[in-house]
Image (cartoon, rainbow, N blue to C red; front, side, top):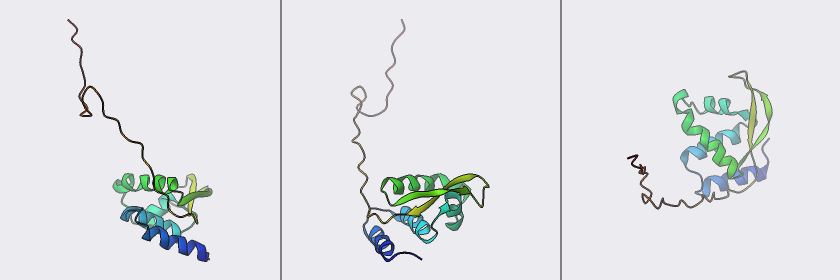
Amino acid sequence: MVRKTSIETYHKVLASGLVNKLKAEVYSCIFNNQDSTQEEIFKLLNIPKLQKQSVTPRFAELLEMELIEISGERECSHTGNNVYTWRTTDNTPKKIVKPTKVKCLHCNGLGHVIQERLF
């Protein structure tokens, strides 16, 4: 049974605008399937093997926003490996503040490599 506060938080998270469509799908799936493994979430979302690399970072982002947390550890029903399980929290979404990037003084941030002449 999901607590009333959890349901209220769930609706606040989706209405906040701080989670994009893919993050919202992952968050909703975790909310509806508490204590599931990452692989189980992939299967529930019908994520093909080749697209997992685009979904995996969403777990880290939701964790950094304190919207999900590791709830335990158990054997995954799909892989047989001992892995973490996930659940949602009652926290309201926190905006992730990314550090400001500084441009390289040599190439003005274009990524050019400066080569020295050897003769």
